[in-house]
Length: 491
Ligand SMILES: NC(=O)c1ccc[n+]([C@@H]2O[C@H](COP(=O)([O-])OP(=O)(O)OC[C@H]3O[C@@H](n4cnc5c(N)ncnc54)[C@H](OP(=O)(O)O)[C@@H]3O)[C@@H](O)[C@H]2O)c1
Image (cartoon, rainbow, N blue to C red; front, top):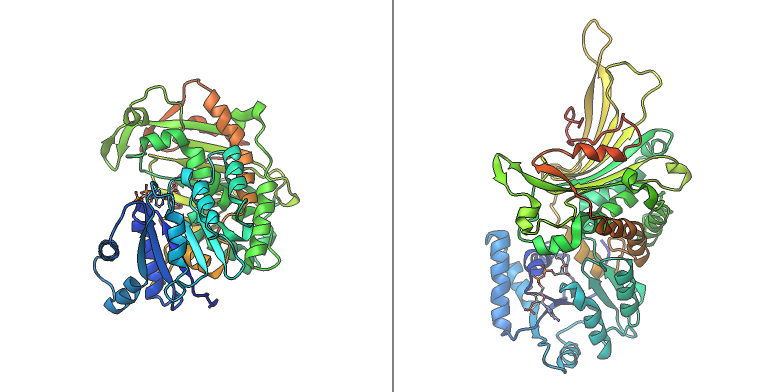
């Protein structure tokens, strides 16, 4: 277990949704697991004045909801004693000086400081400026780290502007950019499955792999988030970070070691090796659609435009892309990435389709390796075996490896991220080169889609992929896997 320095976590936006649901309960869980350093403190910062006792009562209510009042009272007492509140009203020009003065009390607050900015993205740069103005980003005596929530920019230009602004005060080693998918154990498992099992590496090439599909589908619609979603779209919301990270983990070369630096270096190389989509052939590489009315689990649901109350929106709720990677390993192998709302099933998975064997039988299905991320976590090889009997016939069977077995600890992504933050391990956080590489690939597509005012394809809510999406496949034998289960695959 890596030793963690005593430190203070300063949580901006502590009363917000993310903090209530994930961060405070996540810190409490880490305390329950004895993973917080003994003297660690949490200073929550909000814009409104609040008595410390009222804040501690509020924390109790967050934990009561999250853990249904089922937690150890001794750990609770220890946890609550770590917590403090500081009001930072925007009208007070000395607010950050007061914050700095309070933090300088060494007997209460360990001097290694981690600032978690769980606030609106438009406030990230300003808060870093304000922290720097009172010397709180200065690392001469103890470490100073800043977590930037997602999204890191809304395109390449804004990402670079944010980077330029925060690097006036912070070095790369001080910046922790969140893609919470990287905190998921199932994503970390991709890397370990690939590299600690020697059997996979020889298979992981264009000689054996026909194509790869990276999928995140949901039955949920955009819900209350219509305005946010219409300004964002599926490409930015899911593909730009989460699915591109899954692609990087699936296709990266083996790192020299499993150290954070080496893993990140290989992920950066993988993202930078992806060939940009040629805009003159955009329709063969990128497909978008919107959900219309339909039924989810037997219930009628509205279409996207009805929910948005704007019949003119051309923003995608379904996005599918095809990329190639410019490395000898991946020569000519299409990488299909798709995400959708209101599809017939919810799943996040990586599905690798292998090439046909030289000796194939006519009824033979394809070999797939499926790494399922959610809702189920497993790795599954689908192979053909003989059906018992007199004939030479085969059927598909699964070699299943559950990634979660009974009594395994269940760790939320934010718990891993918070722990790594305190450990100074950046492997689960994004390097600026990854963020930029990803925006560089997606920006041109996003711009082309915004400019394209032609009618958008629609799919019925609760249906499978729009048939028109097949246009991006390299050949008629390729199809979207419809499920992580065997036998329900063809569109
Ligand atoms: N990684 C993910 O999956 C994920 C998911 C959801 C959200 N996010 C990101 O996480 C961040 C927070 O999201 P959220 O849903 O929690 O937002 P939220 O519910 O709107 O909360 C933001 C909080 O920030 C506080 N705040 C605003 N300006 C502040 C300042 N200058 N100093 C201190 N506190 C300030 C506000 O509280 P007061 O009014 O009390 O100050 C508010 O409660 C956003 O950047 C969002 O994009 C990430």
